[in-house]
Image (cartoon, rainbow, N blue to C red; front, side, top):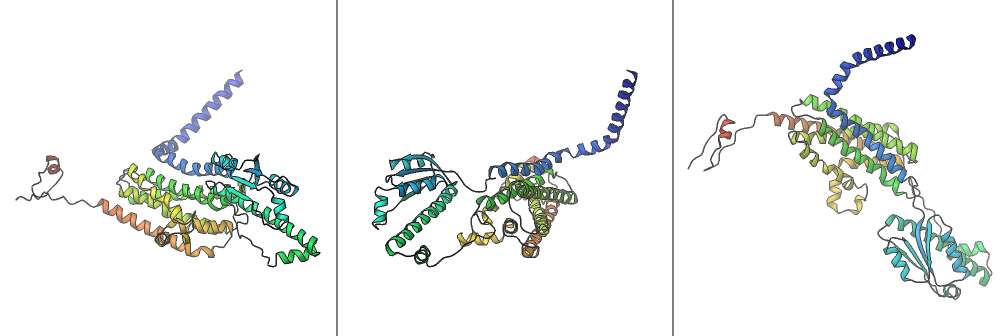
Length: 413
């Protein structure tokens, strides 16, 4: 019992010593507690969202597209077609029907995204050479789902068509299958999508969407940590710290997507590090500029950062610039996100070296320096004493205006 008491006393002494040692550090930390929450959010929120969205899109491709089939020709030929659709991973046949109106009804209610109508006498018309038509309907409100279904159905129907023509060539013309195949398809081609062979929309847009979140968070964090009355040196240091924490957050986003959710990164590591840090510094000082311009009014400054969110659209990340009106192609040239997100996507999907993105790094470095200069000039401008306003003709001067003005010139009639 006595030994246990001694141990407890010894532990309490150690805790007291540790508390005494950490007390100065704790006091200094509490001085900057207003910075801890924004920094924590900047560092934690984007990676957490990455885990959530990465898991959501982890399948990487659309499958199990809800499909309704209306088959008016119950023959072995059409049954073979239906079975190919039924057993294909891209489709999930939710209903078989004999009523054409069910296709529109199910699509309108969101129960199906693809509808297939096989006409009556399909097999007979096919044998008689009358070129029967299969009607396929897609839900235009779900373009990615419709696109996946459309390509796969075209592939299945193409295979059936080729098989039918080969059978006709063998049966009626007595030709060998290889000869028939060469005659019905005299020109063959092979296509390959470099960098994104499965045309995966998730690989195409998810990385940029998450990094867009990071850039908005950096600008807002910069506004929250800057206090009215800070010297420009303190403002500059805080801006750099925010940018570096934002860069760490960006690296975590890219790393989590790569390591845990199978998103590709084929480019130079040095390239992504330099590109990210320079861009993050530049965009953080855009937030600094808003803070200085609004004289410390955080609500107004944060409201002014809304334009950052739109840069993803103007950069041509989600919609190609070549398809936009000319005015937007000009805007894109002056949108920093286009010199960051587009090269980064190329590095991820296609690959590349540090030398390949030097023009983009050069542009972003100029942007960063310009932001430093502009924020400094705006800071100096705000520090200059404002000249007293002259009273307009016939305007009465309030007592508080006189009290706050050393010299007032009154113009009378």
